[in-house]
Length: 187
Image (cartoon, rainbow, N blue to C red):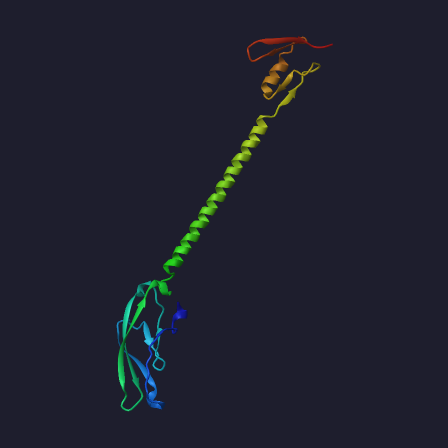
């Protein structure tokens, strides 16, 4: 905002038909309700900000500007000047549109981050489930010493029990229905 100080924000225009020194105009603020926030260049009539404005300065200000020539006697004219200060002209921070755009960008960033994190979490869950299924679904063949292959079991406890049931070359295998199959080793 300090860049706005002394930068013209308006201009009071006046003309004098005289030429030479008599035609030179002088601008003077004679009445104001702006507490010195604005001033007028005495030679050019440019209105400028005298100090940084903030959101507390948003208001309507009225100045009375006297314009007179350099003749003898000087010919004066008084004109009112109204200045409106609002947030959209860079005085109260960002304008409403800029603030809205800022919040929109923040919202979009949060939504994108949430979507990416959700996708990563879902991907991790899918990979872990597949690894778990592969681990549980492994089928290890079971061999009994000096006998034929009895079958493949995924459960090592059942395979160990099957191996321990071999007595004197006679093997019994329990089936799901509760029955047993008996067979002898081949010589």
